[in-house]
Image 1: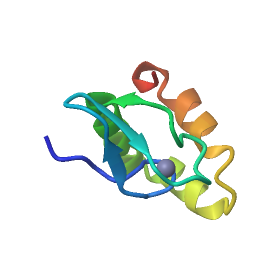
Image 2: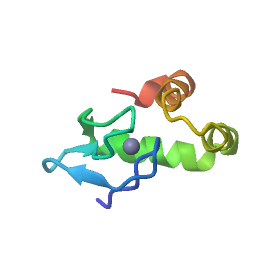
Image 3: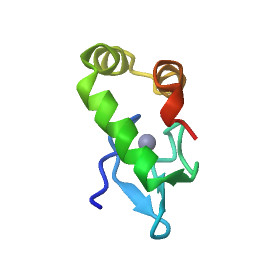
Length: 79
Ligand SMILES: [Zn+2]
């Protein structure tokens, strides 16, 4: 399964095992949070599809609220 870029910061993820992945950007709010590969890709997919949340994330230059927005919008795919 190909890994998508971090849905919060766009950074390349680090593959930890066959099933686990994390963001390696030290400034990213999901940095070091181990995520299931499937959830990671699903999250990246919905962020890519939802132009409103994508716009909000791009407009906000600080990353700190981005993960909260994603969690509020897509509670079913957060760990
Ligand atoms: Zn990130």
